[in-house]
Length: 473
Image 1 (tube, one colour):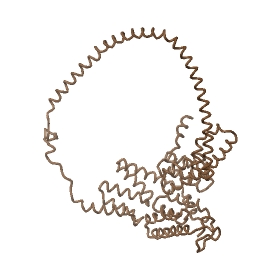
Image 2 (cartoon, rainbow, N blue to C red):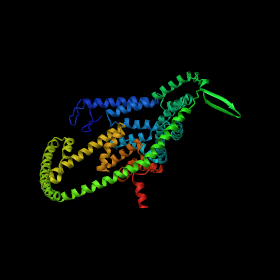
Image 3 (cartoon, one colour):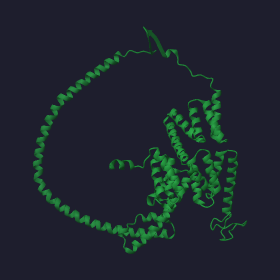
Image 4 (cartoon, rainbow, N blue to C red):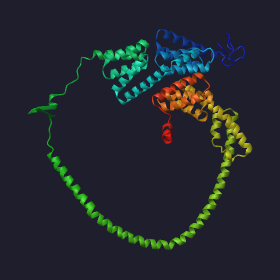
């Protein structure tokens, strides 16, 4: 075990022999992380993959730099058919521990089989399409789509579980048990599969009951020649209703005659009368317009003087406010409270400052921007690891908008995978391309090329790309 601060080897005491830091809490946290890793390893050996994944995720929450736990979690995801999740864990592991990391071999092995990577990416999109069909209530199309997914990736536990639920929805419990058993072969103690199988067995015991039939009195049949006439038992005569409808139609015709013949004549007379009154009013108004015009010129001159004075006052007020905001921002900046300093700097107008104040503004703004970019990247990576992809997109988008090549394009790389998980494939394609152009990592470039190629083969394009091509043509 090594010191969290200086990376020196630790002994049995509670302090680091090199830097003297108190490492008792760090030792405790590392021990808990190792214990959870060992528990996950035990469960993985008996193919309790979901239980092992829970233990390993908890281990990484205690120590995200636990290389063994992260690599094993990637292997479990790969075994459960979640290839993209496995690649994400191995890339994170390699970025934290670049040297002597088995994740490099795993990534190289996946990259050697680019066709398999494309196939896995297509199965994920087809699975998402099946989920969309389920939400729309189109269960037959969802079953067809899931069968295609499982034929290409038979180890996808989520696919087997969803197919079992669809069979349960359509009351085909024997087929549901078969799909759930297939999921159990991969993950023997999957709690969802066990619960669904128990429910299917319970329904199979109750299949002896039949649905109640409709009463014979609800439908009457009789034969007329060679045809069978079917009508409701309750039949009513609507002759009175038709009489009322005819009366209403006659009244509507009368109203239409009045509207098109009488009312237009009345409107024409009123219009002629109104025109005469308008002429008289215009003659009165023209006599007063000259007097009003001179007064309006005088008022306009006075208004211009007032506006000039207000503009000067407002400029002086803004200049004063900018200096006050700059001084107020310097206090939290000196205390390393960059977030508060950044908020206050937003209200400073640099153009209203003198030369020395502008230099101070530029120094503060540069340091705040660098720290805020680091905080946004760290928060986005943390949300991504917790699978909060929407939150990760919000943070990483702010980083890439300012610097697409930030941290060797890692921000663009994780942003692309977050969009891919959210099902926004055009945006995912955009940021995979940005990663290819800006990264210096061969593994990140290779994975991004494979993912981008798969999305392009599926017909996805970057937003705005198709419109630009059309305008050029």
